Every structure is written in C-alpha cells, then in structure tokens.
Image: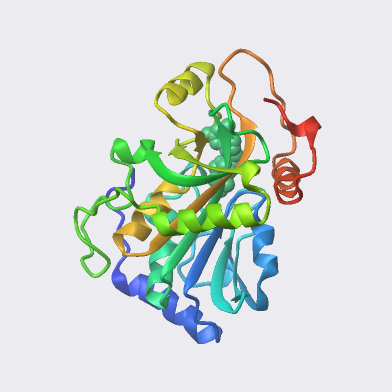
Length: 282
Ligand SMILES: O=P(O)(O)O[C@@H]1C[C@H](O)[C@@H](CO)O1
Ligand SMILES: Nc1nc2[nH]cnc2c(=O)[nH]1
C-alpha cells in the first residue's frame, strides 16, 4: 500500500485545466471502457483525443487491449469523455493513481460516470457474452484497507466517511433494463453483484467456490476503487460487466492465449447476439 502518497487538489486541477484548454467539449458524462470495450469511444462524434502520455499528471496504461487514450466527443447530442483504457492495481499503480481521472472529471464538470469491465461469471444464469448491470459491489481490496480514500481526506471532494450503499444509481439501472427490453436483448442482460479482487492471477477453484458462496455474480480486477472515489465526490454512477468467461469451480483446464481478441469477440457476440459457441466454456 502507498499510504504516504498524496495528490493535492492543485494537481487534479492542473490536469483538468489543461484538458479544458485543449478541447471545446464540456463533458457531463464520463465512460471508462474496460478490456475489449475501447471501441465504445469510436462512436463519439466530433472527437478530440489525447494520448495519456501527453496529458500532464495522467498515469500510463500498460495492459493489452487498453489503448491509453482519452476521447472527448458527442453521444446522442450529449458531451462525453471516454477513457480508452483504465489503470489497475495489479499494474503496480497506487489506488490514488488508478482513480486519478475520476477527480479530474469531477473538476471538469462531469456529473455521471459509466464504468465498464470484463468479468468472470459465478452465477448460473450469466454466460459468456452476457451483460451484467452492476447493482452492488464487494471491494475485497477495500475491505482490508486498500482504498483510494485512505490518507488525509480532501473535504473539497467529499466527506471523510462516505456512504456506499446505493452507489450504483437505481434510476439508471432501471432505465437500462427498460432499454434492453425495448431493444429485444433483455435475455442477455441482468443485474448482479460484482466483486473486485486484486489480480493479476485468476481464481483458484477454492477461491471461486468462496466467491460463489458469498453471493458474487461476477468477478474482475477493477472498477470498485473508481466507483468509491466517484461516489465520494458526488458523481452518479452506472456500471456494467461484460461476461467473458465462467469462473471454474471444479477442476478443468481453460487456455486463453489471446486476451484481447477473446474479449473483443465476446463483445461482438454480446452486441450482435450471434452464437459464438467456441468461446463458451460454461
Ligand atoms: O479493465 P478490466 O477490468 O475490464 O480488465 C479486465 C478484467 C481484469 O481486470 C483483467 C483480466 O481479465 O482484464
Ligand atoms: N478475477 C477475474 N477477473 C476476470 N476478468 C475477466 N475474467 C475474469 C475472471 O475469471 N476472474
């Protein structure tokens, strides 16, 4: 844990000011694209994009499938900013660094955060290619003190002891369920509980059984710290997991040798609802 690390309000402000002076967009929605989901940003109109390496103060993404680019643009007439690539604890980033963009977005005037991720399923009804709307999370690193809010509290962002119950906005969740019905894809979409583990290794069989018994529907290695920081500073949060695999609860070997194309293929299947049986392992 990097308990001595601090990022001052001025540092977040500096990055926010730099971005605001380099784009005409004034986003009210921020979207974090999980593994294999970076193409969401390609749907934005009138784009301004910046490599993370060019943005003062921004961490660098090191994961395959995470482009490391911030894209501003319009989605259905709304000004948005999209992270093509996020920062994970397992990359060696401190939790303050992994969540750095969230406070920058807040200072830029963002009101709603949409988080997405790739996750493994523990629920019988959640199959690869399905989408899980996150209704709640279990933040395993947070439960043992690996929390970006540890250290001095910056009251300008939020209170010392923020509530996390209801951190995934109920209104947005209902809206998306309704939209899924209207689009005829409701059989692919359901609500569930996401658990964040530290990674980077996938679960042992015993760990998978434990998570299942605890009521976890999907497990991944991101998202919870971002949601904690977003909720602390008053952002409205919506989250979804793209289910990429079933988490093994009994002995069987699964070999995934192309992380990126695996996620992209599953995303494509989710969107098109085409059969992709060679990728199903559950
Ligand atoms: O950024 P996300 O959470 O989508 O990254 C995925 C899930 C795990 O963090 C990691 C390994 O699958 O990639
Ligand atoms: N921890 C974890 N993260 C994932 N991300 C995608 N699939 C998985 C999984 O099975 N376990």
